[in-house]
Length: 125
Image 1 (cartoon, rainbow, N blue to C red):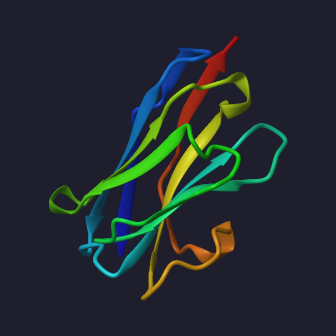
Image 2: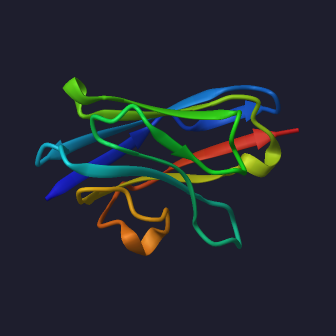
């Protein structure tokens, strides 16, 4: 079992930045695909970013490319989502997710087994 806890959400004005953290506990998240998702009110949950543990490569969704970056600290079992140039369309609950696998699948919610509780990000204009 893996437990995921997000932190770092909050309220920010347009143009601002936030860094989300996702701390994993339980089984060591080696050989896992780690993902960030978000869900805005009335919308479906969408994938934002993903990376395989220990890999430098990351996938960033087109909707946030150039503004969001994903990184990980394997020693701390923690991954991060750095969000810059935020705009009101980025307002959502952000979730981290994990899947024990040998490669990252397409970034869709049903593909991931473990989920955090989510953290709210609100961007005002």
